[in-house]
Length: 291
Image (cartoon, rainbow, N blue to C red; front, side, top):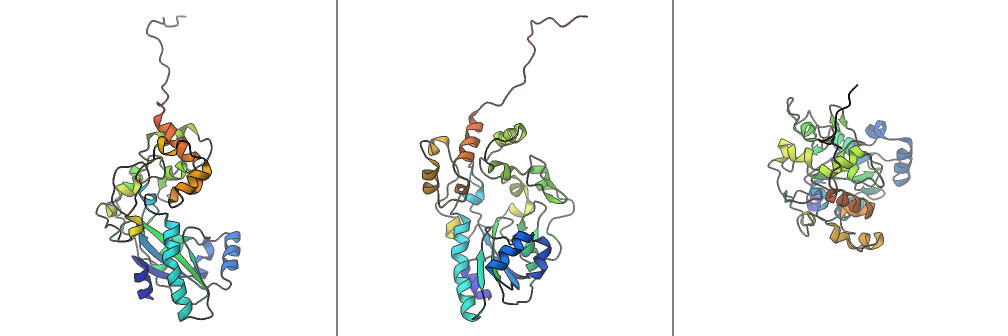
């Protein structure tokens, strides 16, 4: 199987027992997975590197190249086909952040990388700049994990210190406070969230915890052309001017930030151009109140 993953461009891969993931599944997720692959026995997990350098820009590094959902689906398809040819009668279902499989838990149990305090998998030499792809199958395979220990030094809290919203704690990431999550929300946000996005260097996503991570300081560049070519580091309001939501989705269909539509990006860019609110100051010629 190693030959298949190498040909697919994976940096690391492994197998997790499906039964071992049951504690991480909600009932609706378990039902959905059963519909995809009855009698599922194994989840294959692979990490695909995407780091192409840290050029200046207001888009998170992960969404500057081709949409990773499309890339991983395309790279997982021949692996599934080859496995189906080698194991007739078994089912192989690919997934790339679009299935109910708990990918981080599966990667941990498969021994693919190590869990960082920022909640992401660290896969040397690419650091945490990797996407996880999965294959759900009813073929029983021996688990290759779990991962042993952590690569995070006991005294390192670089990612936690870099997080502007305090979303990172000892028990993981609070998604409702995560800046990346906030930039992708639709509609009105709280004044606190608005201020955080206005101060952020990005209008979509957030790389602050990853940029601070020591394992990412010398991260190797991805060998995958989909994540190295046709990069789009930034967007401006002028780029979006005159675009309907439908036209936006069509123009940027190959980018991962297009899934939410144009509204969050327009809102975030507009906030960047608005001056931050200032507190009213008492006039210098106003007499102080006297009893």
